[in-house]
Length: 357
Ligand SMILES: *[C@@H]1O[C@H](CO)[C@@H](O)[C@H](O)[C@H]1NC(C)=O
Ligand SMILES: *[C@@H]1O[C@H](CO)[C@@H](O)[C@H](O)[C@H]1NC(C)=O
Ligand SMILES: *[C@@H]1O[C@H](CO)[C@@H](O)[C@H](O)[C@H]1NC(C)=O
Ligand SMILES: *[C@@H]1O[C@H](CO)[C@@H](O)[C@H](O)[C@H]1NC(C)=O
Ligand SMILES: *[C@@H]1O[C@H](CO)[C@@H](O)[C@H](O)[C@H]1NC(C)=O
Ligand SMILES: *[C@@H]1O[C@H](CO)[C@@H](O)[C@H](O)[C@H]1NC(C)=O
Ligand SMILES: *[C@@H]1O[C@H](CO)[C@@H](O)[C@H](O)[C@H]1NC(C)=O
Image 1 (spheres, rainbow, N blue to C red):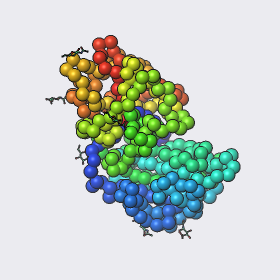
Image 2: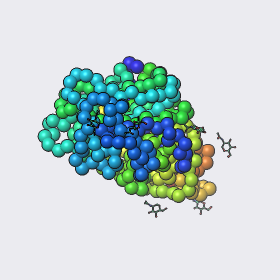
Image 3: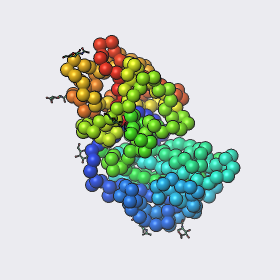
Image 4: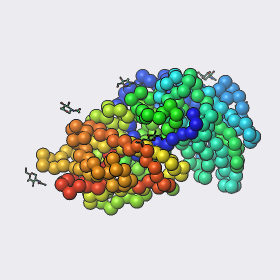
């Protein structure tokens, strides 16, 4: 694979109680001292000690994240070698690959680690630790080129390279299909749950594919800013049918934001922003509208000729309320900041919603 394309998931998501595929999840606690089941999620974690990774050493993390797998990390030697984890895959099946990094050592910030992450021979990302307490998450969506993939760490320019967790989650073949997936891996830039009820992320078991949905209430540098005035949060306890292609979790789709003054806008500033992105948006009408009420809007920014002239009537496009409508926007070329806004059309009686929860 020559290079990686990027992928921006505005709001990405299924249905509770599909527990069966857990046995196909691979969850590696790098630097961990033994195998265990995490009581919070019911997922089985294995330690990389010895059998999976012979190099490096396990280090204790100061004030780790509350999840058990962040108590220790694996530090690799500072040299020019690549240190690789080999994960078994089924050829041509699609997977989510996730690597996370919580450094958790205080001290001289200039010496915080900065190193490269590879997926097979493709450079995936440069991991730059700026905040030692933050968990940095890197995700890719791939179609497995063979019966295994290598995730490798190398080339530190400062500090020693390390890793906290490595996860492999099989996806359904309907999910995230692109025409160019045999030549590119898709890097996930952001996945936002709009109208979230708390700051907590939503993931497995609410999302049977274990994608991580960040809350829009999360406040951190380079995240969501520029929220339009009049934006309100709504939620429903009614079931939302999300069984289209990407299966966003129902819980994510049960909350939304509404632009009551006719505009909904956000800027998403990302650290490592894609040159060429694909955006997925997920909408559902979750308010009970009267017979003479409609909610229609247009995408104003970013401007794509194919999409920006189209009037979206969520309930009509989704074929009914409480049902998912998931337009995706191809080949979005963006500068560092993505701005997006949805504007209500003149014949719409309701505000604009972004249900990308
Ligand atoms: C942990 O699980 C892995 C994979 O099943 C196995 O290879 C390894 O021996 C186990 N380690 C311990 C300490 O039980
Ligand atoms: C595995 O764990 C043992 C005991 O905790 C430790 O001495 C050894 O260095 C570890 N090996 C690796 C490769 O981390
Ligand atoms: C893939 O989707 C089908 C329905 O479209 C479902 O029956 C099947 O369980 C799904 N497979 C996985 C691995 O989620
Ligand atoms: C959910 O919506 C109801 C009104 O439908 C509101 O009273 C409640 O405060 C909302 N809950 C949250 C956590 O926003
Ligand atoms: C919708 O219809 C109801 C009666 O059917 C009427 O009272 C109301 O004013 C109408 N609302 C709008 C926005 O036209
Ligand atoms: C929309 O819903 C109607 C009634 O439920 C159904 O007959 C029709 O096939 C649906 N159309 C699509 C495109 O799903
Ligand atoms: C999108 O980008 C891919 C890969 O660069 C290219 O093959 C494809 O033709 C582009 N599609 C559109 C609609 O521009």
